[in-house]
Amino acid sequence: MKKALITGASGGIGKAIAEELAKRKVDLLLVARSEDKLQQIARQLTDQYKIKATVLPKDLSLAESPQQILDYCQKENFNLDVLINNAGYGVWGNFHEKTIEEQLAMMHVNMDALVKLTYLMIPLLRSHPKSYLLNVSSTTAFQAIPTFALYAASKSFVLSFTRAIRHELKDTGIRVTCLVPGATDTDFVSRAGLDHIAEKAKKFSMTSEAVAKIAIAGMLANKAEVIPGLMNIISAKATNILPKSMIEKIASKIYE
Image (cartoon, rainbow, N blue to C red):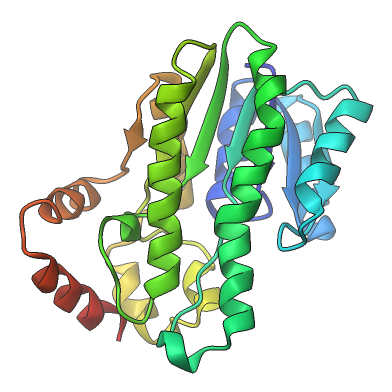
């Protein structure tokens, strides 16, 4: 690994993955909306790990952003061999009670932007004998979740899409992995409007650093799916055993 592009790199899992790669002396292109946060992270990683960290402030809710990211990579000769599609967020609440605009915007970031950036970057990744693609899903992908309907569905899409293209790309040098984290100590809960379950979530949350370490190890081991944490693995397996109606009832109690 020499150069990595990470979306959603201004905090949480994205920031932790950036540091995990910096430890391995990988140069970074950090993408997120907040330039100030990115600059601070870039300085820290550059000083601590003696790598080159470049920032590219982009809002992935805008349709033109993936193409602009590719244009930047080509212009600056940033020929990445690692792509981390981490950017994403949730909108909590009953589907019919939230505005369709905010829900479609979330779907665009979680799915459309990820798909387009993946599509645009595959030629760059294929130019290397070995390269890596890591898409970030969620354990919500394994079941339907009332009050989190579109978020869970969008993460199910990411998981299915990633597994499919893993097979399509198996004869290339691109190793494709899907990270499927559970509750993680980030600002996700607050941004999603889930403050009412914040204390409950803390009991089961993993640190971003722990998730990132497991994620990169799994990616380098060419795993199809990486589910960090024993409880998350157990809950994921349970969705294959228990009736869907029971799983959905349990999920609704957690998020209501």
